[in-house]
Image (cartoon, rainbow, N blue to C red; front, side, top):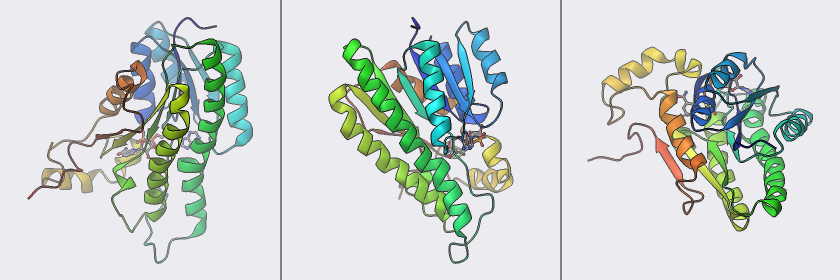
Length: 255
Ligand SMILES: NC(=O)c1ccc[n+]([C@@H]2O[C@H](COP(=O)([O-])OP(=O)(O)OC[C@H]3O[C@@H](n4cnc5c(N)ncnc54)[C@H](O)[C@@H]3O)[C@@H](O)[C@H]2O)c1
């Protein structure tokens, strides 16, 4: 069994997920990286920090992939302390909800909500089994949602619905797993500079410049990674189900 705590991060080939995985390695954890893309860049950066990384090509929407990833993680490390549900997609095309089609709805909801929900189910059952052998170790699950959980964007309804669902999933799992000493948190990113937002860079440059966010800059993947690491280190043990806004103050109402 691994001496270090082990964290599984979905969508860790690039962007926010890669930053989270690297920050957790900096905190002394070994990593299991799940993505449909090749994670070898992230693996190299983790190994350079002296930690181990196992990459498993996984589509979070596939029950077979999820089961295979958990089996590989168990055989390599024998333990799992942290799950970060980060993999997510925006609709390929922004479409008015008066027109938007079912294919995009199913695709976005499958990756952003259904896949993570059932991955959490598999991990939670494994963590409960581990708890019988390890009464005191810290275990937690961190969901990456979005300001879209509460901000209505009628040109990407399926994304907003999926992220609102992630918020409820956080509450459900927090309520169910508290008796097992497993914390569950929601990190709510604002506008973060990654491949996902590259296509709308000019639009958000302008909005941020005009004061959309009290802190007038783009968020960086490292901003999200720092919040996840605080949860993973166990600094918020009495705060299960807490939402942590990492959005430059976007959620503030001002007058
Ligand atoms: N960038 C932002 O401004 C922003 C804001 C709020 C929330 N978020 C959320 O943060 C998370 C990460 O976003 P990002 O900006 O790093 O995006 P990104 O597109 O740069 O990275 C997403 C990663 O998820 C992986 N992925 C996609 N579908 C997958 C699947 N079916 N199975 C496994 N992996 C899959 C991708 O291959 C990619 O590596 C997402 O959940 C996103 O909704 C991002």
